[in-house]
Length: 211
Length: 211
Image 1: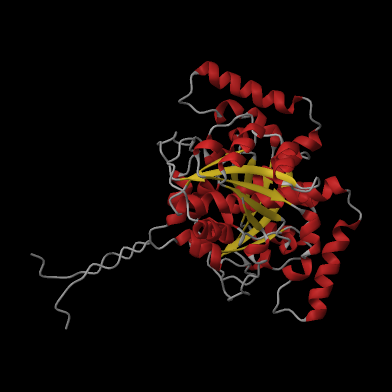
Image 2: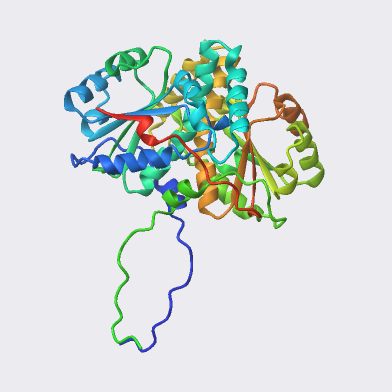
């Protein structure tokens, strides 16, 4: 019997670090769906990611309908995890929409003249770019939110499988997305039904330099 | 005096979600340095991010030397947070190095013939691309690690300020980086000495769609 009650040591457990260390691609999923409110909260958090000019060019389509999942899988060379996971998040970027919404992206605490100048500056940056240049930029920015999404999902106990092997034009047609958008990744998500493989990475010492 | 010792409720505190909600750009820093071992651990975790083909094209230079920080700030249009923060991480992507290291990027648990085929497939993907196409692809992939890095730093109690306004050619010359690399962002990092502004984002309802 314990006679002394001692406070536990105040070591902070870093759940984000644990998620980064543990996360791996999962291809087998329980059929249990993730409630829409929980998926919405996950996407809300992923969309907290920072972006240049606060442009937030990322957009999400969550595919849960069985027939649509089957069609999406077909557009992704038959990848089975789309059928097995209860949901697949189609992450796309849309700079036309981001440019349209720029007034709403400016911080409401800023005075109106500074907000107007911010919108002007953002639009001027892209005015002389081709559609391809602009959308390529937006697609790269969307990957910041992809990093957030994958780490946050793991931290919440969901498994994920990001996919880059798919036919973007077919996916756009299937979902009725505009021609100009880009699709950085499809992300199957659900509760894991396999251990998966431990991730392998290059030794960090070979990737960094202190000056 | 308590007579019953009750277990605390098992509500899981999601530190990653808290970090996503709280993170904001900080431009004023305490002078306290972050120990090199802690920065190394942060970069190790950021480099756990997934990438297509497990290419891991991200590389990091951590600038702490005062004279080099001053020169880096000058190459970033005089941005003061580089001078104020104890360290600035230069995140760059290098597809030439990623292609070279591809044999080490393949999973050691895979049989040798599959590893060889993986390297071959990766190199074939880029064989007919121009240097610009290849490096643009690597730069976009590096933003997945940027998302990881910013969220993990916040979770560990560090403040960050990602910067896109700089002259990449000057930064490369300063650090002796090859001409072909890309620099997705400079990230000032340290302990915060200001509250910063609450982040503002578009309502998630305007960015997502359930099917």
